[in-house]
Image (cartoon, rainbow, N blue to C red; front, side):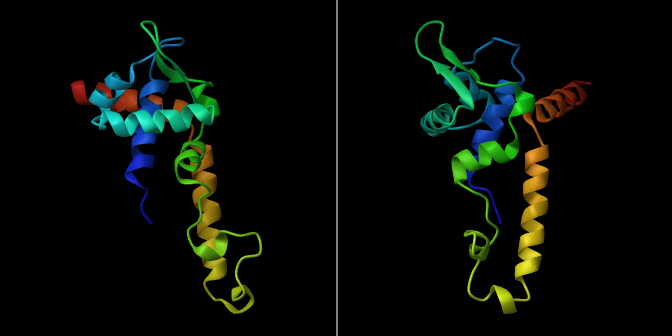
Length: 143
């Protein structure tokens, strides 16, 4: 399983915004430059995040983007699901009924357990934690 580039870029952009001072906005071009994300690609991602209520985007001279909620209220799972849709490690986990092979499938319980664990971890990982870790790593790199 590998996240798409779009999801990776979305996570990096949200971490960048989580590190901004309260009330501060960043331009999409600033985020794209700092995070090495192609600007047209990031613009589409920001639009998706704005529609989902994760970011607040304003146009104009005093515009820019910022998080629409506190970083401790936004999880990695939130961002991934905005970009990718609901997380499912296997097709059999995509529907509420599972699949017709579920009663006799030796792998179903494994897939379901792994998915529960991944979802729990992504839900527990909020952007305030990721921003603090990014700040810590940045300080270490400068030392």
